[in-house]
Image 1 (tube, rainbow, N blue to C red):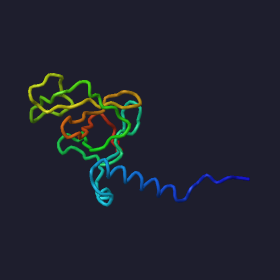
Image 2: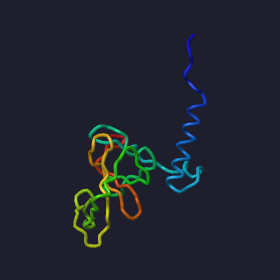
Image 3: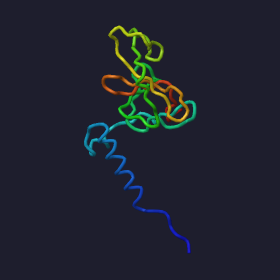
Length: 138
């Protein structure tokens, strides 16, 4: 006899668990998670793995850059601290170096699957800055 492997309540249970985890990671209530806006799902350009599925915000001036509190399928390289030395007119991807002079500090963020660099994580506030990614509308 055929066994049905579909659980009609499974999708709802999965959504509730995901919402609970997102709320916990962001330090907000489950009710507030529903109000978090997402500009795009972000994928690795090397292997198309999703690296940010929730809560990304597009940069106002640099339209190919995003920031987010949470990331998926990434590895944060805490072995080397990078420092932002940019001027007001430059983008983050062009001006981060290993030499520090009191500037903002970041960790390199790479795709967990293929190792492609996809952005940076702020050392202080743990916010992710994605700049080498494919947004869902691409």
